Length: 253
Image (tube, rainbow, N blue to C red):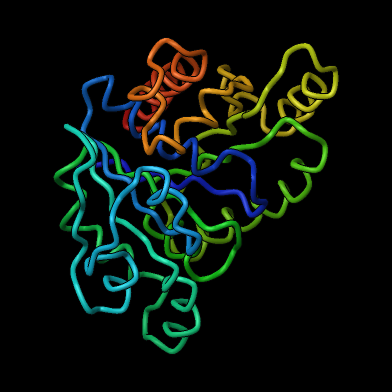
């Protein structure tokens, strides 16, 4: 049964979608089968991989109009796509009974087909994010190594703890992933030190270095391994995936 992981940060521009795509692709490099769920109404994950609009989107599935229908990107990697229509989902589902559990029910028959399911959450803490957290085994928090990016970390942790208490007993913080890191910058190093004091061993040892190839890959509609396999970005995300595998194994044990 696949491990379901949400990538969550209610601040935009922290590398959340980039991380979702490349963690999924990195797990495929390690021989795993992965499913990406684009749960962000901006549909950046879908756009970054150049996937065409389909009648089978996460929006239709959440509304009960269709099952989850993954689209194959490459061997071992599938995606459930999003469109801008998803922006209306929270209002449309607000009166649904069990609205926090809709995604979990959709994923139950699908997760058996994958080793990992990676959910790219919207940059908010609304109903879509709540559905992701209720469905997940763990949460990864991508964090840009800048001062403002640290603001709100306590709120994220609080929301995760409330979901764990009330809706999903198995939910755990899988790690905090530092992104856009430049070791030459004192501020970047200071941010790492600060989040290590707050999250301890939950901070991934691997930092995602600031790397132009990671910014270029979406323009070519590719993940970093398909676009530039020998880049620092590819090396960093592969190392993160190896760390993640170790953390998941420890949780299972």
